[in-house]
Length: 327
Image 1 (cartoon, one colour):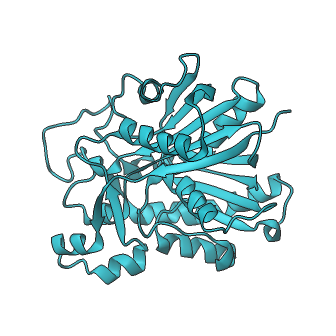
Image 2 (image 1 turned 30 degrees about the vertical axis):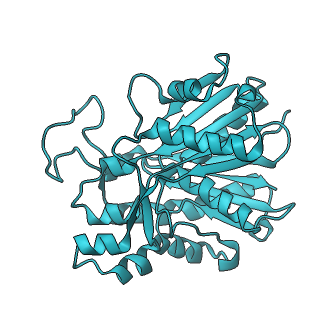
């Protein structure tokens, strides 16, 4: 059977920055040190009013192509993860194919997944490659959650940032993608939702924060779900890959917020020097957090040869997933 490997990663952050200082000026009872210490985020990048998912996706892909000297001509499948597409019709991945000049013989699809999206995308890419359907899959994550967030919602504005990433996955050269463990519990759907974002309920003209037009997150319920589900997920994926906890060199979790990650790390029993963080300068970028922290770890020399690395994503849906990759 063919193996699937992560060849390279790049990411894009919008130019506009929302700093903790700026948030504190808008919300005087929301002190800077509270945001920094509890959430672990100093600033987040926000898409411009005329900047959308396809624009950011193209910029991330162009960075990937330029940095690693990749020709768009080799791409034979595009997987684009987003929950804030340019349009519901047509597929944003089709727009990206055209803007990048990727051959019309390539497949292209969007999949609506949030904070577990990168893991799910890797599983889809591996399936395409091992089945012989594609040789070079371009996995793109791009999200503009800021466009869903009410201007008076200080909690969500302090957490979420916008970003896009691009990952080339093929059957040669790179980090080998191991076995996956995935999970779903739709009973938690109402705890992280934009109620009026689809066909069941339509967007209204209301600017009320509780109108259903904006992102709603029940933070305590999301925290409880994470603490209950993720320790078992970590144990399951390690067992499925026939490894032990001590065999894992680095852990890369969805960068939700530092308070949650520290709690998870301690509950699972992961040493801090094996647990990688990178959210302070970009915030929670939803499906882009894992590729961003992977890229930063690689750039900083944290990733060495012959390492076992555990990736875990979790959140909206509820949805979760994990995989072991080997450098």
